[in-house]
Amino acid sequence: MSNLNPKIKLNKKRLPQIEELYKQILEGDRFALGKAITLIESNNPQHRKESKELISMCLKNKRNTLRIGITGSPGVGKSTLLENLGLYIIEKGYKPAILAIDPSSKISGGSILGDKTRMNKLSKSENAFIRPSPAGKSLGGVANKTKESVILVETAGYNPVFIETVGVGQSETAVHSMTDLFILLLQPGAGDEIQGIKRGIMEMADIIVVNKADGENIHNAEKTFAQYSNALGLLAKKESGWSTKIMMISAMENKGIDKLWDLILEFEKTVRSSGYFDTNRKKQNQEWFHDYLFNNLLEIFTNNPELKKIYKEVLEKVENGNMSLYEAGDYLIDILVK
Image (cartoon, rainbow, N blue to C red; front, top):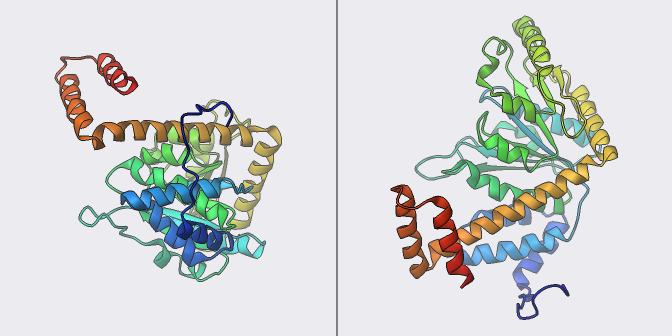
């Protein structure tokens, strides 16, 4: 604190209702946790102020949790896998949280699918927390709020934290940037077309799971397994030192769930012992800070009437090619500095 400009006064006044909410979350109150996530997802100015205060308090209460991202095409069985995996690890003494990003209604902006209805057994467990959130109008919208949601559920004592994405697409990059482990779920028989999955998503995956390896799908599952196993040899070595693993399971028949969990624990042990786990977390915190800083600088120009007018004029010049993005950026920054 001694290096900060003494003229800058930080507001340390606590909001009583937020302090109470924080205490309830610490005690593992699921109702309070749900209320807190609703608060951080709100765009109301007062709610945003309160949510910042709450997250700041939660960040001081560090938890040694594992954050797991899971993706795959719609219908591949993500929810079935998460339910059975969640029930399995609860028996092992864990308290899993699942933050599921659902497709959004373009009319209401609300979540369409609702994972609590798809994970009926798990949602009834007192040792699990499931929260479906709408994907919103933009890919990055909920991803920004998901980071805060992760902090909240960790503060409430949940571990591990799963983030289930809408499906294979650009949003996976955002989820990958806030998790420790990334799982890619595949359909049997998808190998011939590589399921439209881009190389970049395969490179992000730490574990590739071929699901629905049961009944008449066995042959297709084995074929997909073989094709993706060969494809892994073409990928560059990961910075973490971990080599991407691939396996077959049947989430519906609850086969292979135990082996998947063992593989997850093996990954965690490997990256924690190598020091990559902590290094990656620091990198993610840095990216989060940069995103927050950028978004707030942009808000300064879009919320202030006078600056908004200048911003629109400059933006129009950039769009029409009458001003380079560098000139425009430097011009706006100079205005803020002065």
